[in-house]
Length: 385
Length: 219
Image 1 (cartoon, each protein chain N blue to C red):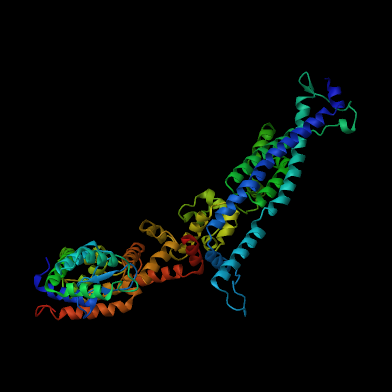
Image 2: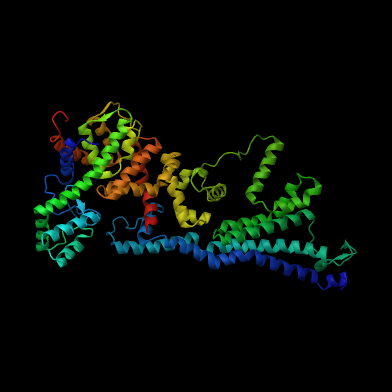
């Protein structure tokens, strides 16, 4: 088929549309897989960690929902549990239901289809409409349907790079059960702005590396691009608004929290240990994608850190890892004074006070504050189920 | 080695601390946690202590109880007993009479002596720890230590303190004699007595009861 025949038969547009549909389908796959499989697994993880009594405590502690209304006759334990079951289920579906992914997914699909169509059109012109190694000039071709939307190198590279990173990121998040509506919406935004970002950032670079740079930039999420642009603006315009990238994230002082974990917590709007201590663990699970046990452990450590700070590192080898372990030890000491458990707890507390370099009354008081905190009581209750 | 002249005082202090004025030659029930039935000065527990179960079996057999009865009582008492005695009135009387007889006394005393030797071993460790600093532990202070180690087991933290190391934020004793006041300060600084201060008064009373049996000039 000649170039003119190929164009006249609309084969280029059909090919581009088919390619765009295929690429959009690929990009949507992880979202659909998460909706069908991942969401259910996530829900099962959360629900399996909550007994009816833990749900009662959760509603009271984090949502301030009293199980018995004021001036109402007191409910039986069974009635309280039934109320908590229903309310918890309703709350979960209202806050974290699948419906929250619907609109972002539609928006992402539209943006993805448009971006990949443009890219495919550009690709078709490069692949199909060449003659003797030269791209055909379209000035002589009929206008309208026969016109191709051809992007120049930088925006095309930007879109390709963004697509590659976004889809791989969506796949990873879906398999980590950590796909949030904000991720899908952010992906739509990133793809929609890929061409503009490519132009904007490569303007700072030499022409020879502009196209590969535009592609490579796609691998950076919006947050990083924002930092890069801010840093460039600050440096080149002498605004003096430095970005303190070297500042150590205090959350990384907790055991098991590395920089990627800290980044995920930051994504969930948690940047301090105090925020982590008093966060809603269900919300933390949903925002970070961590399993409930990890969320509970992080909150437990944070609660203890609020009082003991770096001394917690000294107590961990003795078994006092966080607020839940302190609660457990104190419970044995206070309520099982004549049993082996109570004596063991007393000796452990003595050892721990010595390790922390504190007197027993001071250490004991800190432990009491930690153990009697309503948030610790909730964590312990859900953990023991 | 702990001076043997201190043994009666140590024994009496432990007895008062464990059972007050009650007889060690009868079954008692703490009705707490995993506790079963117990007897002897050291209150050997039939649920958590295999030696106590063996001794009770020997006591019952020495009193002429048949194998079925011994098995029945042994099985009933080898359990946590939060509601007290699970025995029938007849079995209860049989067991208490067996413990109260002369042979019962012998077997229970032998069990107590074994357990006392464990306490004495811990006291030796404490004396040795203090001796490294050239210090000696006053007899009344030893009574406190006896009650403490009988309750908590190996005195690792206490030995560090007696050896001149600060523990629990508490400075070591000044020496050269580790006094009753030193031990009271140490014990009151522990988490156990911080959580249960009322138990310390009982310990003081038990030590006072034992101190009456200390040799003249040692109190």
